[in-house]
Image (cartoon, rainbow, N blue to C red; front, side, top):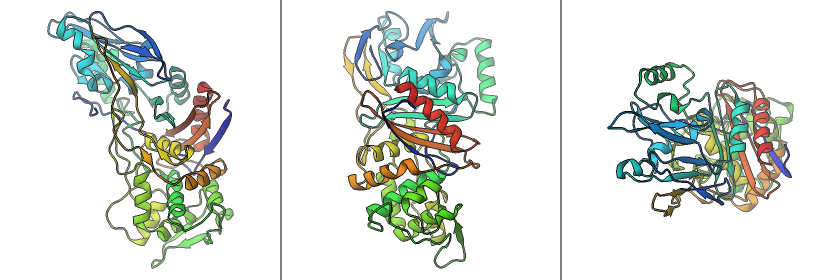
Length: 437
């Protein structure tokens, strides 16, 4: 995968990543120039002299505008590689409203239209090479991919497939209406931003959270200690048994249990740790928190109502009402890769207004230490040993992190609905990391 150091976290059926989506509606998206490259360095400034301002990726505008012929709304949006960047830009339509960055920064992007002067630009953190690699690798699948700089929180890729071209319905013609109707009728739901708004059960990808809770609360001193868990773990006070899928899951250590996705072990760890400890660790890692980047992401949740022992065991295996997005999965992987420090993902590097001033988005919160450095290092050392298996109804997951040749520490999360297990999702993640190398 062309990286200097690479750690892979594969898990049964799901290997760590989630998705989010932006609903198809005419209203605004919740959430909160001079172009810059994906690392935030300055590029040449090219504000629109007239018309709509632009959204910039890798120093180049991926949006534009042209005269609409309608006095009330004089400009319609055009796009370059619209389907590739739709999860980032959102859409701007004369008939169907706005969402995504088009909605969040509407005042900046339309400043020139209202004043008769120039409009401002929105400069994103997206790396065009990583974005295209993820988009091409996902292909026609229903899926999502997120790449995150673990230290800065910059989102380097934010992809959702199938996608759509926002320019096809940006105007007010019969063709625009036909394009919108086709998109909203498509059963694959291309208007859904799976990287941000889709939150299925994380399945075995949640095992790392359970493992972190067990280490943080002193149940085990090391990921190599035996958990003394029978292959068929019977939940105390019930006749319900949780089975491990491999003989290696009997009395497995946390390291081995992560590798072979041993549900029996993580059901036991959840019960032994208790709901309070497990919920606390999950929340420190980003669960049950609102998150904007500045687009609003669906909340990844761990149950807050009291659970029975059987229900608690179920959450330990990533079920029982636990849900997560690909964004949250990439964020957890980044935290473990970077010594236990949780960062707030961000999609916008800066906003450059028509008057020449610049504004950097404020931190939306949620950053800080999530787990101890020792816990993070223990789990990070175990991640390369985790293996995947075939996907289930929730789809297949993959998460990994790598230190790139330029020193960046990057986490990647991929989710494929109805996929064929972590191998395919892992292949997609590999292409993203190769593009960043």
